[in-house]
Image 1 (cartoon, rainbow, N blue to C red):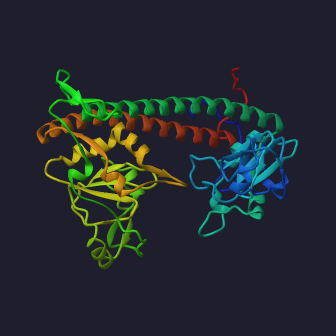
Image 2: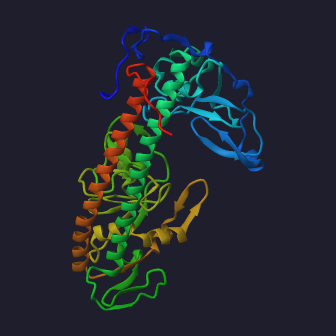
Image 3: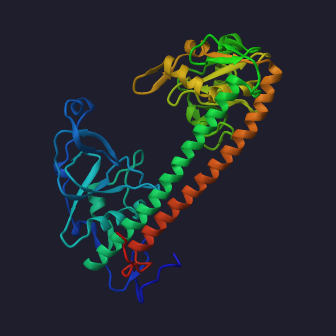
Length: 432
C-alpha cells in the first residue's frame, strides 16, 4: 500500500475492527442508511423453479442458484447473506451488488440504499465487516435482521464515496483478471499432466515400440507385448468401507472419507481434519475391510475416481464413499494409481457412473474397469518417469496457487484499506 498516500488527519472511529478513519468521515448504522426489503422475498422450491425457467437471477445466500421467468426486486440493491454465507472467510464475498431484475429467496437480505449512499461502496464495506460481532447461532451462521441493522458503517462524503467505489471497481477487476488468467493456466497444466499420464500408461515410454490393436476402441493401439485385462483380475480384493455412519469420538482411530483424500493424493492425510472412531468400533469394521500400507484407495461417491496410495503405517478405517483395492504381485500399486489419474479411467467412469444429486460408482463397475498392463519391470520404469514429470508440474501448479492466494490477500487488503480511509484514493485517475 506504500504507493498510495494517506489522509492528513484521522480520528478514532470508536469501532475496534474499523480503527481510525479520516477526520471528516462519519460512523453510522446500516439501518439509517438503507431500507430493508426482506418482506418482498419469496423462496421457491426446485420444482417451482423448474416450472418457471427463465433468464432472471434467483438469488440464494451467496450466489445465483437458478434463473426464473419472474422478478420481485428491480434496481440497485445490496444482497447480504442471512444464513449459509461465508461470513468468516475473508477471501469470499458475503455482499453483492445488483442492478437488475432479481428474485431473492429467504436466505439473503435485500437492502435498498438511501439516495446519498453509493451502493457499490456500501457493498465493498459490507465485505470487510467483522461479522463475529453480529452473527448468532451455534450450528449455522445466521445474520438476523435485527443484528444486520446495527452493523456500523464508516461513511465518507458523497463525492468521495463515488471516487473510492470507482477506484475499487477498476483495481479489483484488474486483480480478478490476473487471478482468472492464473486459474486458466492451472487448468492447462492439469490437462497436460493428465495427457502425459494417459500416454505413458497406454503407450509406454518407447516411441519405437511395435504396437497392436488393443481391441478396445477408446484405448486404441498398445505396445505389442502388453496385455489388456480387467481390474478384478489383478486385485486380490476390491471392497468399499462401512455402509453405516459410526459414532465419532474426540480421538482414537482415524476414519477416512472422500474429503480426506481429495486434497491429499501425493500429500499426507491431514489428521487434524479427519473424523475419529473408537478402537473397539475399528476392530469390528476391519473384519470386513482392512486397509493396509501398499493398498490403493479410490473415491466412489461425490467426486469419484480420486486415487490415494496408502503410504503410512497407522491403522484406520474407511467410509462407504471410499473403495479399497488390494493389488496382486503382478501390479505396481503406483502404476495402478497413475492409471486412475489417466483420462481413460474418466471415460470408464462416465460409462459406469450413475448421477442423481451426487455421482456414485458401484463396486461391480470398478471391478470391470479395463487396464492395459505392461510387465511389472516396465510398470516400475513408467512409475519413476511419471513421478518426475508430475512432480515438476505439481510444483509449478502449487507455485501458481500461491500467487493466486497472494493476489486474493492483496485484493482484500486493498478493499479494506480504501473503505476505512487508510489510503487516500480521491485523486486516483480511473482509466477507461
